[in-house]
Length: 330
Ligand SMILES: Cc1cc2nc3c(=O)[nH]c(=O)nc-3n(C[C@H](O)[C@H](O)[C@H](O)COP(=O)(O)O)c2cc1C
Image 1: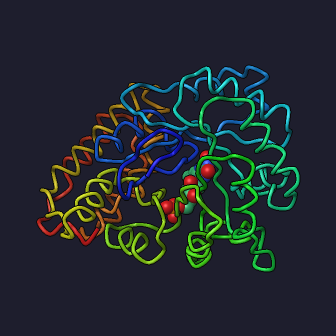
Image 2: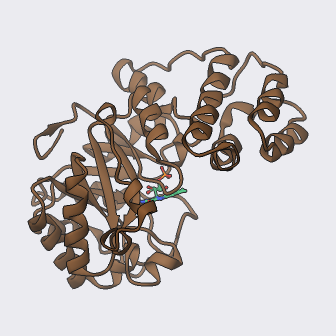
């Protein structure tokens, strides 16, 4: 499938944009394991046009991670267009607009998924961002605001008419936040709509190679995007790509193979930030990893692991974890 002129191959699998997760080192790691496209954390258009330093740092992309999309959010047409221009200057391959973030500080102010309650403004922003840049512009959103407003099938056409190059749909409403199960029924309906011709990227609860293949097969999506399933498990992309190409499950590696990847993530995080902030940052991955799931009486070690404050303490704890043979059914 293609987004603009970017050829992403057959059945590509993308790393979802995730705040505080998809920094450059994590994106590169997922890329190494086969992610076909990666996205930055979302970037506030307002902060960007005010030249807030911390926000500008999020625009840094590297050649090794291409194709990479920078994602922006906001609720004002002019600042979104200006922010898109600033992002374009940072050299990504795609500009993605976030109309899906459900958290109060974003959606409550009308940005992110809040835009699902103001479709005319959503469409204006989309049109102006498309006009403002030469790069392909894509949109990521949800099924609708709530179960009484499942508007995505109709909205997809309207967004397409604004000139976007692809659409990602997370199969939940804003009201659901991250609860319940993602529903891909409407994502399939978008694909079945003969008026639609842009690629559709399906997202929500893809946590294994088998689920990913099932979503491609039953919904006909052009790409699948994986979010939480990659936290503490960047190797999921390798498992998925292997399964999609061969139809067979990739054999497990040794326990130490997975552990070394997690340790590499710790090292990178500390290098990038500093010891204290790097460890804080990587705790989310250590807490989420399925690697330790089958280890008996792990609770005490888990608490110690998530409390460690230095790399040396953390690595001593990780090195003491008994190496189980049967990893788990990831
Ligand atoms: C910690 C976290 C941060 C997220 N940040 C963003 C973001 O910056 N932009 C965005 O479009 N979605 C964001 N999301 C939503 C994900 O991109 C994705 O749509 C959602 O998690 C559903 O996919 P999954 O079930 O594969 O995780 C975030 C999700 C999580 C868990």
